[in-house]
Amino acid sequence: MDLAARIRDVPDFPKPGIVFKDIMPLLADAEALRETVDRIAEWAEPRKPDLVLGAEARGYITGGALACRLGCGFVAARKPGKLPWRTVAAKYALEYGFDSLEIHADAIVKGQRVLIHDDVLATGGTAKATVELVEQLGGEVAGLPFIIELAFLNGRDKLTGYDVFSLVQCD
Ligand code: AMP
Image (cartoon, rainbow, N blue to C red; front, side):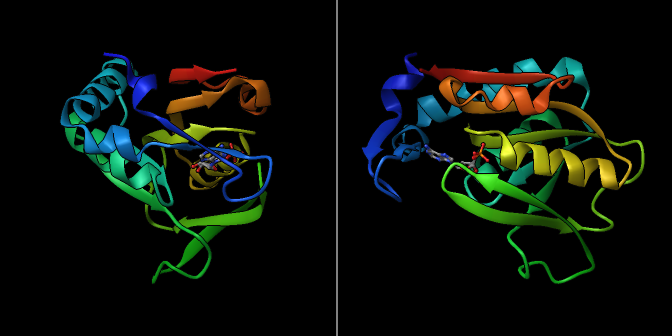
């Protein structure tokens, strides 16, 4: 199936000059959603993850499905102040701004293998921050699968030494 055909380009969102990759048409298509989760799970399975970590907010949708499919638990990385328990935090730069992410301090047990998942790999800042969160808690990064990779932004350069995978590459 042509998954790329189910990703909508929205020019100048949320800022002029950004082409937003909208995965809602892909999520709304049952077959495309299943194929997305199945293909990422196929890549992830041999890496033997214990947990899937999804970044707010679109990383939760396919991340939750992926965790279920792999028999893993799910960890939510959220924007500051949203989680109710004690947290650890990491700052990052976005393609369009700055932000930080938090996870619960007890979300990962030392030695657990964590698959880091998001819809889009752009500059790699978000993914790098989630790597820092996992490693702060003594987790091991099992791999970083994405639905879309904006290859021209070279996000992989921030993730040297880690196992990165994407289903759709955009130049
Ligand atoms: P980055 O930290 O630059 O790799 O940005 C990745 C995060 O920002 C992901 O959570 C994406 O959902 C979001 N993002 C960045 N750029 C885009 C884009 N062009 N289209 C859709 N989402 C994006």
